[in-house]
Length: 343
Image 1 (cartoon, rainbow, N blue to C red):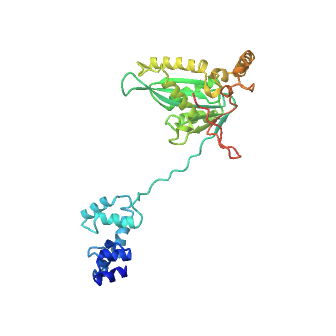
Image 2 (image 1 turned 30 degrees about the vertical axis):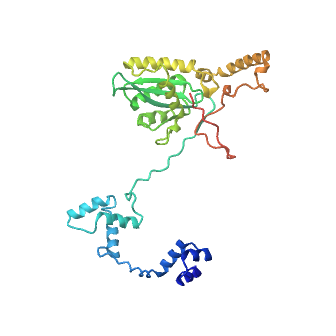
Image 3 (image 1 turned 60 degrees about the horizontal axis):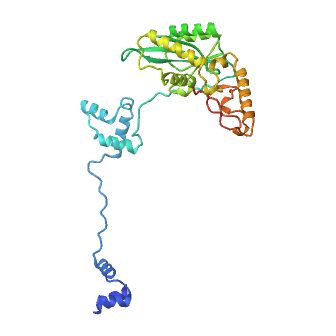
């Protein structure tokens, strides 16, 4: 680059200088102009704005915003209240700026700290051990009118042990509902429900305490803690026969009676080896499973090419030995078996 400049200063044309030095004319001109440019002045020292608050003033604003009186209020509200009292400290944006510098541009209010709820872990290896119940809304004859369906199911057999339709939800009606079920089907060891007002009411709690039945409740806002009732209600409401509205409470009760009969005695439930809940609840599933095995064995002998190499039947026909609500992980760290609440 120096040789190119020396040649051009001696009167050699830029084209010739470029040929001799292999430096393009544009590059040489740009560098030469840069060297001849006046030096940039040193940057002036940053001036402190005249309206900036002093450190003491900023600390006073922060202390005021964090005091008991204003800790639950937004800076805009604090600003307005101070003005009404004849006090001006700074603008709202400055208040936010001070809070941001102190990492307080968040929810500064004192908030309730709710204790962690215990995850319910329930297991049943036979009928009449664990019942779960819930209440679902059935649409009435006009918009805004609903009937309440109280439904209780045995989690092992999936048998609906009781279903009542009422015009309202209350603890007294829940006690009547449960008393009738216990008189017919026996008293279980555990009754599980969510945290609805009827489920946690004093009449229900007193009844279960008198009968020495363990009460179990879902965690707040965790529908998975009551999967058997939720699955049952989906089967109920997504069925083709479920009407858009019920004309009367008698219509709703008649429909629920028909549904319960079908569900208990005709519905082949995928969670219990495609048996009906009634067969499992009343101990008939083992005989039905043996009869199914005989049918499959006869079919295998007639057409062995249509079956696999093992004599074992489809897994979907296996009756689970246990029914869980929130089955914990195994001790060896393996994942628990998939839930069996599907209807």
